[in-house]
Image: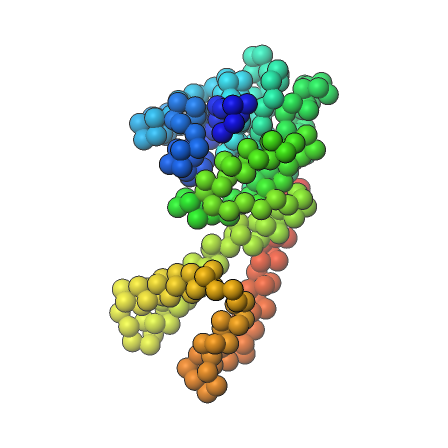
Length: 283
């Protein structure tokens, strides 16, 4: 990280926070001695310290004061309590520029600002940019993709710092905050759709006569290979699909079943339903 953003503090030591933390250390973007973690679980903190060599705290207010970047990696329903306690902590204020990154799904920027900005004057608010992020679970294996949205106080250096941090776990795309519900519906919930497809394909292989082990192995390798092929070729999914679909062949027979059951439309409807639910939860 840059000299102005050296120490990173994670409020929350759950799976996604750990994924980002571990990726930062693994990619040598930040050293363990420049990272601190706070959590309500002492056992979890001890595990993080022993596994990654990072500093641990139980005081979120102190972590906020001592960090240049604060990653809010708590559950959405915990956010109000966490922010209230940070603001109520001794010496709350923003003397030097500090970046706040929230990865809590569905927690809108205005809620975070309402807590953190209320006690601050205009100059302090400008020194506390906030960036809201929607990651997904493949970040756990550094194959994720995140949508991020900066608030009005985030300048180019802040956005670059957030991008560097997030790119340790995969790809990053910037959006207006209004688009983050759609990001949630597509990529945030998206891994579940792929797992659902893998479950269904495996079941079909078993029904066709394969052992569960072989059906699962064939399915996972096929999905992995298809994605790698798509990424390697400068062709659309539609083009690649048509190349596999010979008239009167086995693939055409399968696709006719999918089309007759309107599977494509239902998948698209599922993405929209997830996005709409994300919008409802964030109100």
